[in-house]
Image (tube, rainbow, N blue to C red):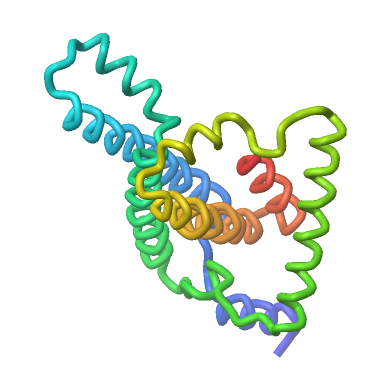
Length: 199
């Protein structure tokens, strides 16, 4: 058995991914559904709350709905459930894929987790210090408005602390990252593109 046969055997035993074009196409579909679902969720709630308003009044309310904590929470829950379901479905469509490997779901040692939490805390302190030195508010006015309109507030907490990050991690650092990494882009290209898209 020569070295090319061994390489082919190793490759065939590894889980497969959608690679570049599959990742781009499916990623665009998931992103489009995400946006449409957010708009539909907010529109349905705005219309159901305000049935007797004119079209222009409803449009003004819809535009301001992005700063409504309750609506933002509902839209986040809807898009997380549907978006994560789509990601799982698309991964399972790829024959030979392994869901836990595709989304990098694996246990992490307590020591490693504490080290990363420490680094994150340091980054937050540095970021907030720079923000303060620049004379900008640490909490943007947008977030203050969202929090003030969240009723009940715990819905917003769950939406922002659990639901939104769950979709973001599954989509950007799971589905997109693995797909791009397994293509001609490699790990460095995948990091740069997914970080750029998320930013």
